[in-house]
Image 1: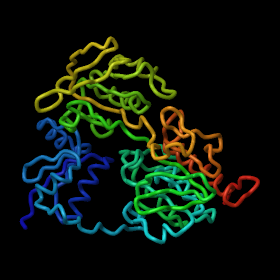
Image 2: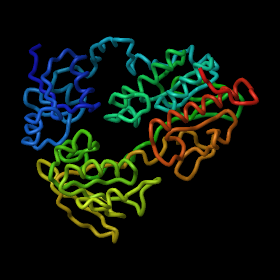
Image 3: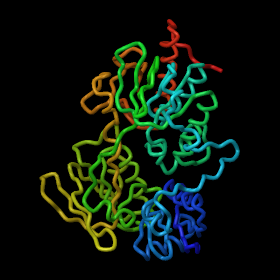
Length: 421
């Protein structure tokens, strides 16, 4: 088969760019990489095409924005049934998510685990480190190990003890690999329901029933399922979700940012360094959590609109305007060059719990200061519980607290035993 001409426009620290490059390598395709965050000429080439985001892949001149496997299969002439070529083997004792997480086997279903974490993000992975190191038979269940909030974070530069910048997925896999080194098991499966009514807890997955003496609910938060009209059509052509990757494309231009959380505020601060005007739309009266707007309010190029939301995103080749529903329920049309959306993580993915433990009106699991739920031996942390801010380091701390508490519960100790060495 003749090799197609493939050009991948990328940005440093972009996980989706890495996903595209890995996919091409695994299927045996060579490509030319053009890093738009390092070389201005490549940046300018994208802007000339009215492309305002990465990855942007050209296959024999045909454009694919983001990672769209179906389009890659069609343009590369691959079979939909064919599996990608085997991934390159990790080096320097590195692990991949695919090598850490295994399918649920009969052996997993026959075991009674001391500790099971539902969720393999920073909370679940940290808990697995402490639980496995504490000599507990430990299992982590995750339905999509590479799709959580930390896993899709483009860049982490403030995790204590990690001085270099790395992607969220790289940091997460370090945690998971460390837990695996201590003996923790990781399986990929979807939790359907739970039964915490007896001493041995039951966790129903598609493959059967997993049994545990203690359970840690460490699921992440889920983004709203409905998209804004025009959002999908203009993704990569004016709609973005990451200022780290795409802010430079909007130098001296006008952008709208919509969100009701800390992430939206921080991203607006970053965009204000590049853009002529940043319009921050907050759909609610106030932002969620303890978020300080004073820095943004002091910036002359930032406009803040509470109780405003985007109804429609419009344009021709790229974003040109948005339809906004204002605080008087009236529609307004604003001219903008780009839209950044931060509405994810609004609700924790705890629906499967039903009435097994107490939850609040938004679905967050209610816990005490030791992260104990309303059921003895069941703990919750990370984005499954209500916190002032959502940070990987806080979730990791939750995991440690929950695992130590579970060790006390399983071994029927009078006091909690820390791990000092």
